[in-house]
Image (cartoon, rainbow, N blue to C red; front, side):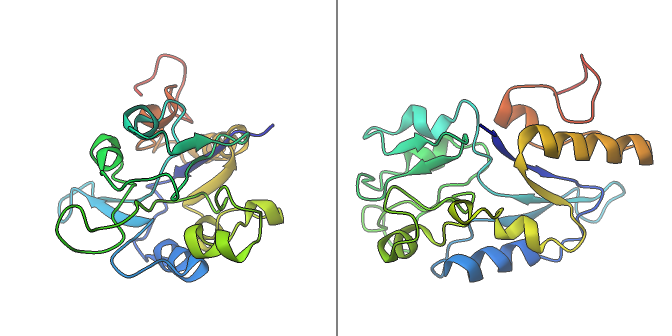
Length: 205
């Protein structure tokens, strides 16, 4: 079974926010929530880079570890999802996540913000695949349709890669070899607990 992962190639990202728009459009994400966002590092100085950030579906997910009601679960493909019927909106997952993925769906005082929302890797939720209930809570289940996440498919420069971890790592590794630079993958080591794609053994993670 494939282990699904994200990689964002900072050497290719042009901060167009196409991935953000694709996600919101595909899933009709509520106002105030961005399941995916583009972050600029070292803005305005030499070495500036842009990174597309969402839930990385970690191998050892902190959100799962801190949730007091165990609403998070991992699919056979390694996608970390959550059950909104179980979620109590405490926000612990938001504090624990190094990528800021879980978010409250609306503004308001603490306690009335509702259920947490996060990137689903376009894999839906615990409801029946393709059902209206699944779409209303989690958005479209593209994985069940044999498709990859909309954000990666809509990336105009193919900076954002999604799919089988071995495949996307090989694609990125080949890019690094061809251009001779840019082996650092932001978030890879944190999310998956291994050396970064494209780096030799013993490289910085």
